[in-house]
Image (spheres, rainbow, N blue to C red):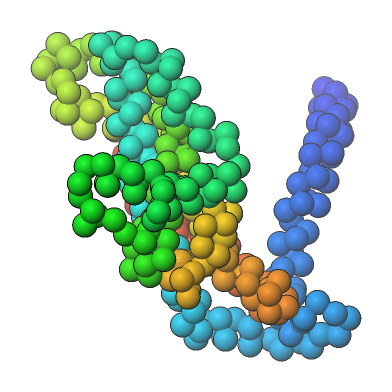
Length: 295
């Protein structure tokens, strides 16, 4: 029996080896190198100097970093409310027996998820265009010209204008996640709840949401981790402007690394983003950890 167990273990390790090598090459090693480079004053050349925690000190006392962090926090909160909240509401409509054309709506909601963020950025540049964009045509035809804005040029609203495309792209993903979770719910519990008079909002609040606690937790973790590294469509639509009004952490690190050629400082920024992301995810996990609902 011991010999058979050892053979099975060796076989498992052999099968796992390619995946472990690929994962290490593309994830573990780059993270380790980023941590090492973050302690050096390195501009990409051969020479570099070990400077201990100076990069981290400069990072933490740089107001531009905290401005980017503030924008990321806005994105995280807005994405969690928008993507998960709207996705959950849409999924409730799609499981309704009275809702028609369910497959059509599921496909329409999921199409943006298949688009590259760069494509999404180009699409929404046209939507926001102040001369011939979709919003301009809608507001102009309705006679509400006072609603017209320079959506991507106004520092006060640009970050919220960029948040909308990000929410729009990923709503469909969370609709699919919740629809899959709904299929795993015990129908007997839902039927008993309806018999007892728990319908509509009460049914959702007291039955469905508690049963989907784990799904909501996973969705929040995915949403936070994805939003903390948001980059593509912001880079295309504004490049972080006007000024630094729409600069997020990933864009801040990119500019310092590849525009200012401060690879050591950029590595410190990348490591800091990773630590912040893990911290936020851990806090969310703790807050959502409660009693289990057994059925």
